[in-house]
Image (cartoon, rainbow, N blue to C red; front, side, top):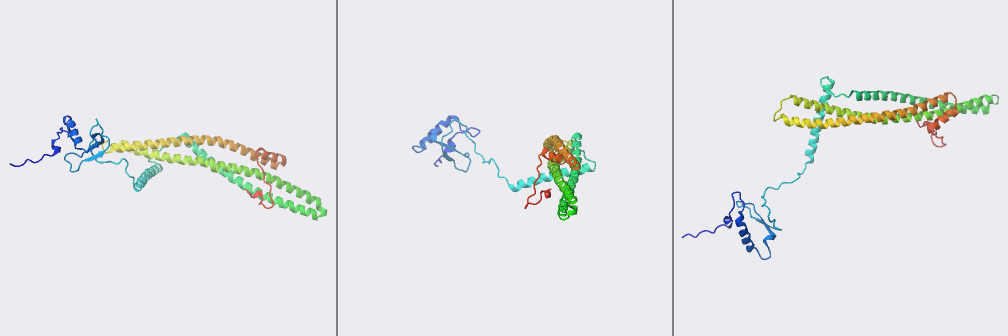
Length: 340
């Protein structure tokens, strides 16, 4: 009679329909396993990880506390939490987004110039921006004329100084015309001194107006340019969303509409923020401009009036009122008049 083949120990373990061990045999299985383990290694110090009875891989015994009363974990593939990002792919994605944004904005600009596209207009804000740009041109013209006046006055003062020295030299060498040359020398030197004082006031006026025009106003206009760029982007994505909403709504277009809605919202928030920033800057600029120009115009008027009235005391008092200090020319240093 043929000998019966030994049974596989795994086949003697009853399982349920879902592959789990039956509770009635679990205690006896753990007891038999505990007997077969070496002395000193308890069942509570081990846990068995199996890949299933039909797996070709062997079971793994791991040392550690056994998770009593916890459901058996099913094995599966290991998934990394964070994938390694490819720098080249990130750059490519940035270029793609930039190209798409540039295309949309260029299309919007062309449509507006051709009169086909609509644009968002804030009438009050844009009127203030137009006035600011127009005033900047006028202030630049005043600045240019004041610089020309300063240059001409410098040349005149320099000539008066030389003429006074020439009269003084002749006063010493011409005894019969000593007095005539003498008081002409004094007059030219006095005119030169008053001219230097007036030149200091004019240069102070130029420096402050230049700061207002080329720094303060220019900084505000830079924010205006950023606002205008945000407005073009906003209108470009608004137009894109409107075109999609006019089309059919199906499984293919709905994701595109949703994405377009999200992009539109992002650019709308950016546009609203920039519009608010421009409004605030225009308000503070107007206050600062009035204060600066008020002081500088009073200075310019008082200095010019005192100079041509021949009121040296009033001219010097005007410079003290605005805390303007004139530099005394040194022997080795270049003349302070050359410092425009």
